[in-house]
Image (cartoon, rainbow, N blue to C red; front, side, top):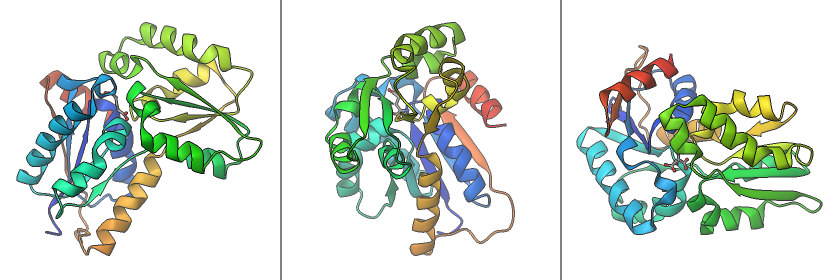
Length: 249
Ligand code: DGL
């Protein structure tokens, strides 16, 4: 068991932002990252559709010897993690939710939460906003519209246009932005070009730390001293796999 892999999935290359942190925190683990680009965007799907899609991926990751599964997608986490935990009771799931608590802990006065349409409407985000909006704190909530999809396609001009459309109205009103979709950290630099003096918050490091904690708690940590292997697969095309290895560096 200890030498089995960490399974990760997302609707595409967004999961790389989490895999990147996992690699740093758990360098001796092996990884299987499944990018479900064929079903992107998850953010426009229903809960039923997402449960069906994510169950198939979980089956696949279990067949391929994964000892723990990291749902590297806010949309899939907010929609399905509870049901997946009920269905696969022997599997440990780590999810990712928008880092609203980080804005609260940082005492940020004006925060913009940017996430997919599904995530911003989810019960989990309502709970987080309820629990972690301080007195004298404003949290604006915006849908990233088809930003995740544009990031998948990689057209920088279209990404810049959409980001400007969403962010410019907030330029002088916010001091932090929570990236509530794992695709968005991949365009952090473009966000900073539009709003230079902004604190960008995302939960990737917290997810990696929690994964390590769960592996230790469940006695599943790989004790090898060798650097782990990373396998990336994509449901749509081999070219996308190549691109992901390049982004990962
Ligand atoms: N990367 C995903 C997330 O964190 C979703 C992107 C999509 O809509 O497919 O929400």
